[in-house]
Image 1 (spheres, one colour):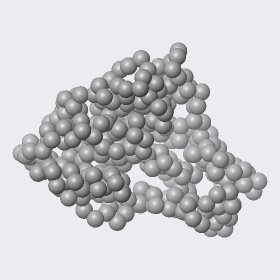
Image 2: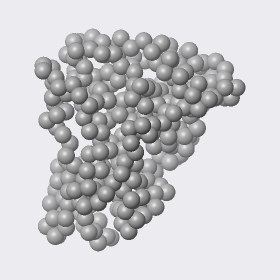
Image 3: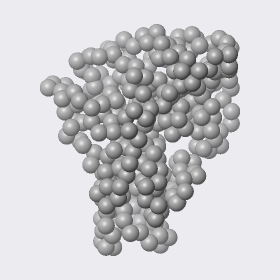
Image 4: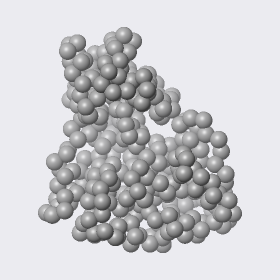
Length: 327
């Protein structure tokens, strides 16, 4: 069970693939939000059960409906709670009451607080989210082998070819976003041959802004009609490199093995949410005593000037993008 957010759900996929690869006699039912079904297409021995948490399965009553739906359709031996929120705590209790064995993720809240607190930070890398997911299956008695630290994604030599670059300037929380005027300067640098520029974003105002950018930059390619998550992943897979924030797009690109240059402000890769198999050297960040100040980016800047993002120079990003393109 893992219902949100998009990036966190995406991080379950390499773990599930590794788990199923090692344990050939096991099948998995993945319970998540209905609109994320496209992430799990084509995974052998995995069946997706999607729930609309804003309609039929909303609220406390919806939790019981989820439980009844799953229990009627499947006979579970074990339940892995990869979310650890009220909804999944209740679901886990219901499965346990039905004599099912369950395990829940250890989120490491204390060590994460020590990393982001204002005074006396303990600045050290914490276990990656994929390791925390894998540990749930290990406590259920299974072996899970995740890729090693040196198994990272690399670019390839793209000389004399059309080079497709994906840009994703948005994040769930505004504090995690690079200032849009500076982001446009970054895009402007690559608005020349042999590049094709693609803009990935959300809906509504975000999509309108990106549509305006598509008109302003001569090498921008109008974003095609996307009908599903799998359609977007297929488009993203064509990119030579993605430029993102600490956002879901970083994790989506990782799923399709695209190298990512990611920009980090109030959050930090040490919290365990860096892109799976992404090169740590491709994280763009400035080192300040106050960083990181948040695990998820949902806090107000202590300094009041958002220096962690304002001090990132576009040249820093350009250098890393060009290094990936040159292989």
